Image 1 (spheres, rainbow, N blue to C red):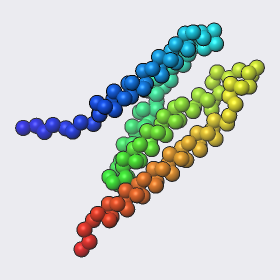
Image 2 (image 1 turned 180 degrees about the vertical axis):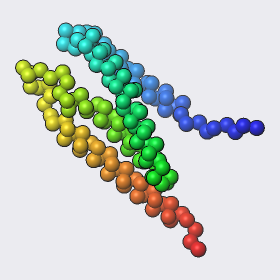
Image 3 (image 1 turned 135 degrees about the vertical axis):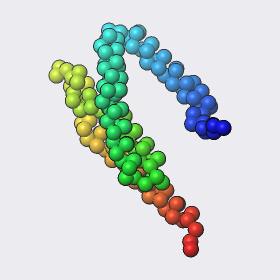
Image 4 (image 1 turned 45 degrees about the vertical axis):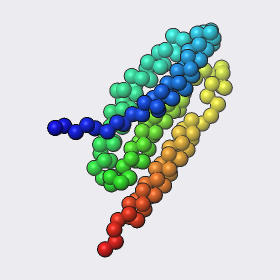
Length: 150
C-alpha cells in the first residue's frame, strides 16, 4: 500500500496570492498598454521573455548545481534556511545583473540608472545571508536543547 505524501501547497495561500497578485499584474499590464509611448510594450516583452529564458537556462541550473553540491555538506537541521537563502540569492542576482550591466542605459537620460546596483546587490545578499546564518544558528541551538542528555 503506497503512502500519500503530505500537502506542500496551501490552498488558502494560493488563493490569497492570486487575489493579491492578479490585480497587481493587471494594473501593470494596463499601464503598459495605456502608456505605450513611454513603456514600449514590444521592447518590454522582449526583456520579460529574455529574462525568463536566461532564468530557465542559466540561473535555475546554476542554483540546482550549487544546491546539490551544498546539500552534501550542509547539515539537515540547517538545510531549510540555506535553501531559502540560495533561492533568494538567485532571484536577487537575476534581477540585478541587467541593472549592473547597464543594459538599456541611455547616456542622454542619467536618471534611468540612478543607483549603484552592484552595491545594492551586495547589501541585499549580505542581509539574506546574515538572516540565514542567524536562523541556522537558532535551529542548531534548538536541536541541541531538544536532545536528551545522558
